[in-house]
Length: 224
Figure 1 (tube, one colour):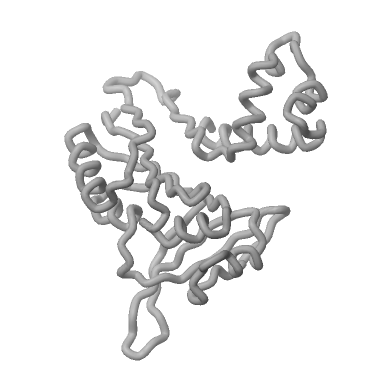
Figure 2 (spheres, helix red, strand yellow):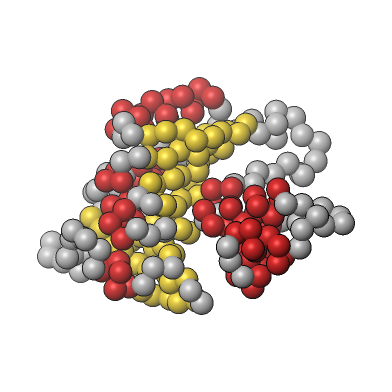
C-alpha cells in the first residue's frame, strides 16, 4: 500500500478564494465544492472557472450579502430539502489554494468553506512532497494553517484502513454527535435517550434525530 499522506489545511484569510469571500459576507457554510472550466462566449474567447457548491442559504441572502460584488452572482441550479446547489462563474486566472494544489499535482478530496474559512483536504505521496507543497502554499497564502495530516500505513494486509473526515460535519452536527456520545446515547444499555440528549442541546427530539442521521450518513460515506 502506498505510504501517502492525507492533509487538511485551512486559510484564515477569506479573500484567498472567491468562495471564501462569499461565505464570509453571507455568513454561509459552503460544502461539496466542485470545480471545472469552460469556454466563455466572449470575443475574444476566454476561459471561465465554474464553481459549484451546496448550502442551506437562500439565493437572496447570497446575492444581497453586504459589500458583495454585483457580478458574478451565484445561480441556484438544484434544490433538495433545505439544501440548494449553486453555480458561480469566476475568472479562470484568479489564484486560489485549490487551483494551486491542482497545479502541484495534489488531488483535492474535500473542499468546504465555513464562516469564511476555506478548508481543503488533499493527498501527497510522501513527507518530502508534503513539505514542498506546504511551503509553496504558505508562500502564496500566508494565512494557511495545517489542521491535521494522516499517513497511510506503510504495510497493510487488508483493505480495512479508512480515514473519517470530521471536517465534513457542520458545527451543529458535530455538537449533536459529541453530546450524544458524552451522555451515553450510543452505549448499550443507553444512559440517555433521544429526548434527554435533545433537551441538553436545547432542541426537539425530531430535530436531534435529523442532525444525528445527517452526521451518521456523512461518516458512513467515508467508511463504506
